Length: 111
Image (cartoon, rainbow, N blue to C red; front, side, top):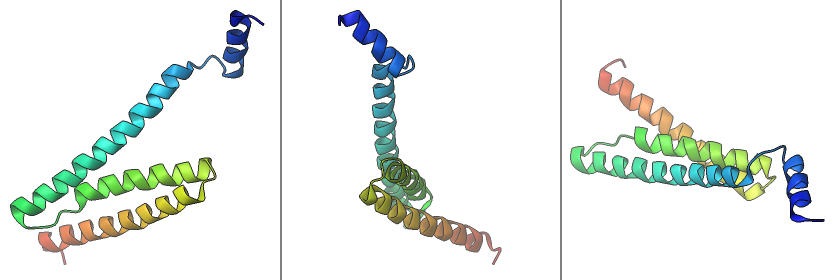
């Protein structure tokens, strides 16, 4: 087998998907998730330090992202640890969402 035959078989096997492009996309998504989480945490801390009030909205976004990410990885890769991590992030995300809406409703004077 020569190089061209191997590449042709690989393309056929991978349905003409560019594996380098796919790998870059996966790494980009992972990096974007980490950066988004870090920015949300920094904004959450900044709001607390500047105003003295808690605003879980920023951290809630990061928690939801990580909940979906780890849950999907756990299911797709059949990885129990990632699934448990996803469930923990999901519980945190639900709690933060409930807290966020509770604070929103009480400060708006609806309740």
